[in-house]
Each structure stands twice: as structure tokens, then as C-alpha cells.
Length: 315
Image 1 (cartoon, rainbow, N blue to C red):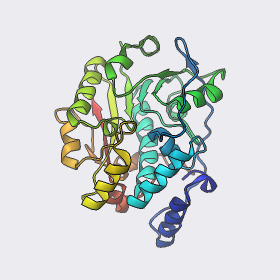
Image 2: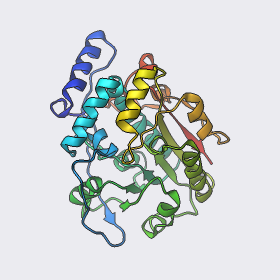
Image 3: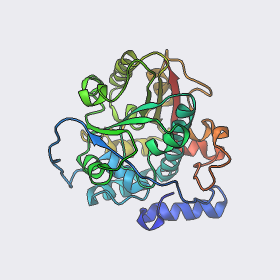
Image 4: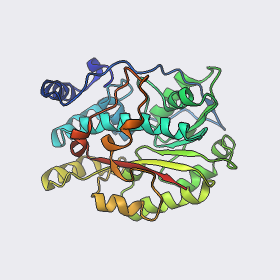
């Protein structure tokens, strides 16, 4: 996990307990995070309300980042008290993201669209993809002003990469896909790798989530792949109700679902092996031997505690 000094104290304590039990491996340094970005279209200074927590900034704090406000930190601490294994879920998500980006690039995908973009702490998905295929291009879409401002501050003007950051609401797929900064950066005559990393489970209505996925699938060229993840209900009413109370706000909308409801969202789509599984079980065997120092997340023995399902759709 990223820099322990910047982690929530409760998360550090749980990491220590898990390490003592031998359930987690030690975490080494991650690859560098040298990004380049171009901002398409006009850009207005962001309007930021530091009193309202945002899922991207909350996640940033959870994984040890510094780009968050007190409201985000408070919301995370309350969430961790209700669902302590959230820290395991976060590590599983980070590791799955790295594996899935490597897989897509290795399968010949050279252009990516990421919907639901948290602030990177120690590495970036475009860097991971380019470690496999140097000519990859990326479009990141985010609705959070802090994420956008962070991208502009750190990413603009660095030569050698092909990255665009676009402001858009990932819940409104039609608007994002019509944005000229998106369509102008991606060649829709070739397959696209789409990363739904915190999108489907941030749409409260199940049918709306399924409809957004359908819009995306219709828009993508044949041969494209959609990687997704979705937080699962833990099946304990007191915990699930507490998470609902904390997170199911208009501004956040995090909606954990049962495995059956998650499967219903992706029903009818062709999922590559191993299908819809807990994130620690997704293609761990693909991690290259040379990736020494990478945190591959919680092991299979902690899959149920990760409580996050994911997979890759092939169109």
C-alpha cells in the first residue's frame, strides 16, 4: 500500500494486524508515475466545495494519498468503522487495476478510455499500459474538480505521452461519448479498452447502470474490451445499512450490490476467463515475474473479505 504515513490511522492499524497474522505480503515501491496530458476544449477553473466528500478523494485518502479534504477523511474514517475490510477492498482494487491494464495492453489494445478516475498516488494506468505497449494513448474522464486540477498541475507539458483528461459525468455515458475531446483522441475504427473503475457501483439504480453499460457497448468498435469492478454487499444487515447511510448520498451514490445483482448488470455480455469473480482471484497468474516490488494485493485466501467483484467484457 502507498505511503503509510499518509494512510488513515485505522487503516495502518489493520494493516499491522493483518501482517502479524501473515495474511498480507509486504508492499514494495511501485513504478514511477510520469504522466503527460493535453486538455481538450475550453477549460474553466473548477468550483470546489471542500465540505462535501467525493468518492475519488475518499479513495485517494484510503490508499495513502494527499489530495483530499477533511470531509473526505472524515467520511473514510466513518466508513472504516462500519466496514473495516474496506482497506482490503482498496488494495484488491489497486492490484486488479494494474493486472487488467497489463492484460488489455498485452491483448493488443493500444487506446484506453477510463471512466471514473481517482487521483493517482504512485503510478498511472497509462504508464502501466506503455510498459507493455509504448504507443498506447489514454483518455481519462473525471467529474471531480480536484482530480481535474491535480491532472493539470502535474501532467500538462510533459512530452512523450499521449494522454487527454476530460471533464465529464461518468453516469451520463451519452454526453461523455459525444465529447469531441474523447472522439477526437480515440480512433473508433480500432478496438478500445474501457476501464470502468468505480462507475457501475456509483450509479444507484441497477437498471440505470445497465443502461449506461449498454450505451457504451453500442458505441465501442468490435474487439473492444470493458474492464469493470463493483463493490459487493457483505450480507450483514447492520454493516450494509451503515454503509448505505454513509455513502448513498446524492453526491456519492456508492451502491454495494449482491453478487446476483452485479451479475444481472453484465448479463448477456461475453466475459473472458475467469468471468465475474472476486478481484483477488482475477488472473493473478498473469503477473509477470519481472514485476518485483509490485503489490499484487490481497491473496486468494482474502477474496471474500475484499468483497469486490470484477471482470472483463469482450465485444
